[in-house]
Image (cartoon, rainbow, N blue to C red; front, side, top):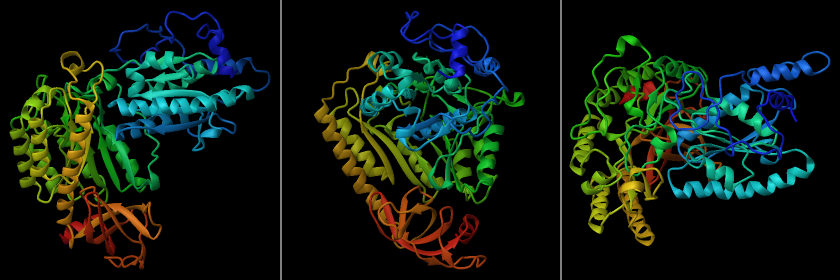
Length: 566
């Protein structure tokens, strides 16, 4: 047992393996300073933190007192953690936050599962299929843990994120091999939870917070090549769409202070990152209340024809202000954001996107359905007609904009006529990128309590296949319109299918593949050479499919120069 675990047991916070359990399988942890728990549970009293017990354990050792784990980095022989990420970009960012916290507590990271002391799965709970992938993965990890036991090197396994929040009790009871369960607002508690698990106990903290944004933690970026990065600007969602589990797994909306976001983006710029995606469950409802002088500002208007289930929220610095400030940091850094709600696109946001050369002309407009009747059942707050009016307004304001969307097929009560209206919306809008799924009912949601999941699985499957086929057909037509044009591409690295080709994305976030060849520099400030990750390259498009553009590279250039040329 590690000294930290011995100290915790001596303090009465651990019981020996096999001892009679207290009430409940795992004890809930106390919220951090200023946090208010949303879920009910037994709260631990305020007390000393993990470092207190580390110092206490060190004091009991003979000889010189050992140093506490360094910040950042790790000591030789430090416990190794292996992280796997499932689901959306928010989970990618959560993985980086969790790793930043563990790194400061003396852990090392490994990419080799067999040498890990700790395995943490950052999970998704949006659909049943996503959760099933985690259950399957746990069965694979069971064998690894069993092999470790005779050797005396216990493997600790943790479930983090949305699935931990939704299914804590089931995870702890059904899978005894899981040692740690931590919800999206409990990553700061990971070092303590892992110390508890060191003694053989299960440990959990799934309390939701009304104010946790991890604003003071700079995530350790893990994206390949360091060309792109995600920056979380807000957490949670207040929209309460009837099908959606997110408000129950990630809690209420709360936004990071703008100052901390700008600090992180500046740091990424200094590191050479060329594209930042601002992240949030409802990213364009951002509302920073940290500065008192802006707390009485009137709420911006919603998109025309859109409504919410909650009253307008006055006060705070809004998304348009943040987008303006972020885009000024580095003229050579592209800015994207996801995932927005269509209701939160005031004209000042659209105008800013149109004016700034480094804000990508690409918008995600999640429709979910093309049927007004189904949209009402989903509590989306708009009609088909209002959505289409927004699409036309966006295209008028931002010429050449690339559009993406989400769709759910087979929602409660969806008829064949409703489905065909969704098919027709796909044809009318002609999205460049689409994310389409069959409906999967989630417990706790309004649909679970009020509606019937009455569309048979085979019908959902058939409708989904038709939506996918329609989307691909229309996306291929939209992308074919780019053939013959020159597109500015940010190089991400070699193509996965051919080492002789490079891969990147254009302004519209569409993948572009082109041969890796020696290129001239448009400004003639650099000698001819091959493009590297992070370079901007002008590519003439020669062919297109529903998902990919292909072309030939013309020259290396810069974001500012390419914008000036157009």
